[in-house]
Image: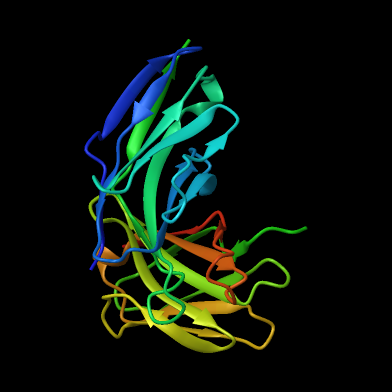
Length: 118
Length: 115
């Protein structure tokens, strides 16, 4: 079974600064997807960024980028120019790329609560 | 395009009762997954439905069940409620027919409180 670990329960950053959230995972599969989701107080989970394991290039979405290290099974999220609206719980998630069985099941880490200080 | 709609948003039930939660996926999405979110256990996968069939199931007791209708709307049911069932229940919808088209869109959840 796959596991996802987020070792930082809480992080804080100053507005306009950069912060990196850590995530490690364990899997025996070679093909999979990794995601970062954001959950603000409104509770709705919002996809921030995704990475396909077969792609060596790190994904980037505006101020959000990842550092994907497949051999180390590490998938960190970097938020640049942090804004007050970035304050939320961030979850790292894993999904198998298999067509059958465990497909579409997301395995989540425990989350990191990000505070942005003005 | 309308998002994922979960109803009701809040529920208070008594131990021993049963409850039904509803999820309407994004139009055209055929996969609906359910997750339980608690402070202690985090987000845990309950089950996934695709074209009215349960395709995957998490490690939850048989009191938790679900179904999907021909219009892809899904319901989950919890019978004989326990205090520990108090949680935020999230529904996620996906196209469900390709491995590569991976994005899951979440609803705002149903907050269930068991007293």
